[in-house]
Length: 100
Image (cartoon, rainbow, N blue to C red; front, side):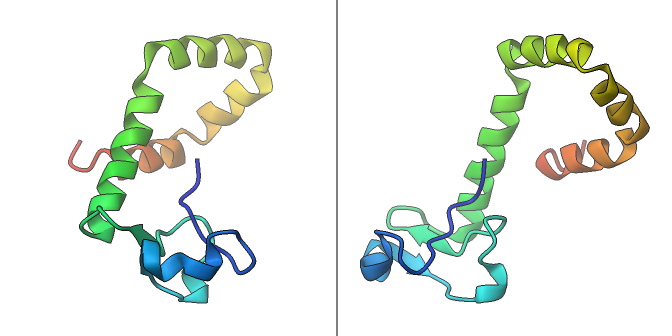
């Protein structure tokens, strides 16, 4: 899942400012930052909060976790990679669950 980034030439580009707030800082246009906040969303912080809640809900789903466990066994090298890099995975997880 990526954060929506409108690029020049996209169908929405010509009327992007009518649809919400747009920060045209090219350094942030990388699908990792919200540069567009649609009308109806109060702020970028609220959009970040909604995004984090959605990601957390998706990866907490038992159906997804069951598929993930099955795939880990099918791709054992990935399991070893996960175990070797567990601290960085844990740090990424904590970005979505501050204070835990």
